[in-house]
Length: 588
Image (cartoon, rainbow, N blue to C red; front, side, top):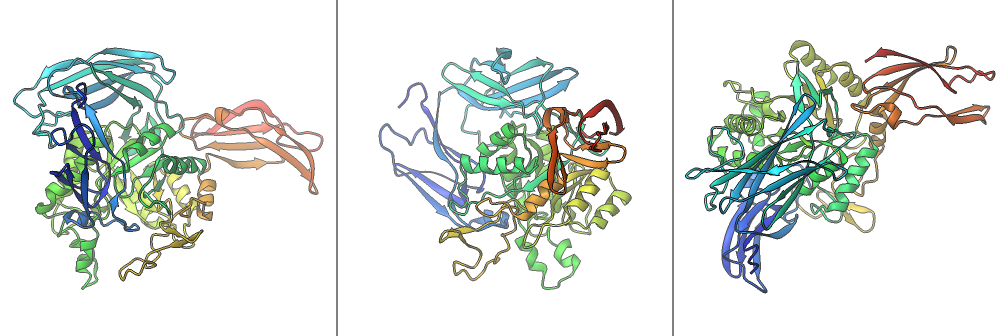
């Protein structure tokens, strides 16, 4: 055994749906929640040299009632499995929070220590590798009580009972004139935590997300989510998604003007969020909860009350399920709380509303009030009871008509409106992108939306042929219902993705008057001036013959602004050749 790192932890990042573990013939433990990390202390089981591990994976468990997502059904170990060796005294967990204070940012680092007090030196480097802050963490003893990383007035429910969590350490750094993280410039600082025998490196993004007057602001700028819903899916590897596949998706999204992702309907692998930090995507991070199956129990009498009003009875509003739902939400938040890309916590999908989600939302807000919350299924509830919605920040809807959206904006409008799913992309869908775009842009209460969905789900067979639901001989299936993406299984774009890219283009020519030479451009970017992002080229043809071509001088248009330029006429009546130095803001 390594004397410098004698503590050994066994990690599974994803197993569907539950599993038992044995190491060298000894039973280690059991875990469930398919898309969350499970960790076992195997210090007393592992030995020097060769070890034998056995894992029994079951396809179904009681958690399956909470994992009824629309997807191509596959089970097994689908994410990384690894051993993590730690010193006897180490940082068990850490929490990074940032606060903007005028022209400076405060970065708080809180550590939970295992094995006793521990000297920790920390420093923060900017993207160029220069140290911008450094210092030692101050320790404080917390003997006789269970410690948490957030003071919420309640006991933090984690499996820490067998660990000597008697110490916390913290430090606050000040960064003057920080560079903010955003989707167009995902600037990241690096945090380095050094102990006697271990170094931990993570990245920090300084940004704010808030609601003011029912409008969402990122770093003080009103923003719109240009998002997609994304499942883990590959035609050859199924749910097993590696770095190359993740980057392929993110690059393709960036190329088609996507700036946000909803992790439908479960947490993704930890690595995925680090990539979203790096590439610049805002993320709705969703708990591994979807329980729409019991809703079918009430379809014997097919009316709104039976289908919607009673949906919550079996799980959402039954205290028997409180701990299971709370556990899944806590696993999500504890794991991903340090990722700057995560701007919204989602309680899950299509599970109706009740006392269990009320408590999950209350815990989430008490633990982390720096992010927003959403849960579309909150609208399905027992019509005879009054529920607490105070911890829900957004009003979320799936597939509403334009008239329904207009009605909410005119008659309610109490919270920002989020299209958590819209423009279903199955068959000859999606549609109405331009209509949704205009409605989103015309009202600041509209914060954007997430198209359903990113990719088709299928399994490759015989070259470029694909298997869908029912092709394997199963008697219960959804046929091709999961073939509903903006890209094919191999990530070839559908025509719908090309339409999406065009509608959500970052700059539009609002008008061009060839008589007066007036050209109006609208910058739909949130943070970047078009001068730094845009090159305008022109061509003039006559009867198909190229007369003249060239490139215009850089054009300055601030984010969310329209600017009118007056162009000089030539003897050939060529209007768009060179801009005069006269700029007038028309609308901002």
